[in-house]
Image (cartoon, rainbow, N blue to C red; front, side, top):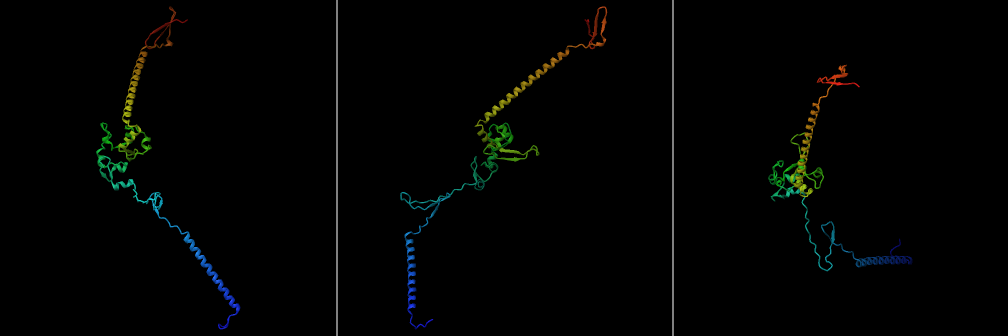
Length: 280
């Protein structure tokens, strides 16, 4: 390295000048690139993100402060009404269909989904197996067996088990014999509604027609039995009459021959009748 007091040579001065010009060019080019990017940002500014509004219907709405007619648009938040689940009714309470009193839980609502309080159930649920009941409305909330439902309301197994809406029932052991199958009990008012739907409100008329047919069949069966009895009596009398006519049984071994008359005689072994004949 040369001393600082020594003058620079022409070659060194030329190199210094060349480096200085190169540095100026690099500085000028970087300044121009920065200005170009800044101008582009000003010309094409980044669009501002619109605020989304929740429609509470499963999608979002873009914020639009003005409508087509240049009037301001306002969005009102509507509270969502949640449907009460069936299992929450016991907590909230429900009105009885009969007395309209609010109750929390009841036997019919728990087992048959019928909004009837226990007080009204006891009032309208007497023993429906009695035959002297005129108004069936007084026993509409009583329980009825499967056999009685089929017999009194003209229902079939398909109606009770598969027809929509499906009927609810409770199962209990048979009180007559524990070894028999379980007994299914249905709610009488639901059975009545199902029967009215199937028979178009003419259940009582069809029950009367069925009873008339049963009576007619019994009468015909009775008359047929009487006629058969008469035939049996007549046939027995005919047999007695046939038995009164005696058939002679002759002893073929003891046949006698009369030479003078030239006749043969044989005698019945039972009554002693003698039969004479001539051999040809």
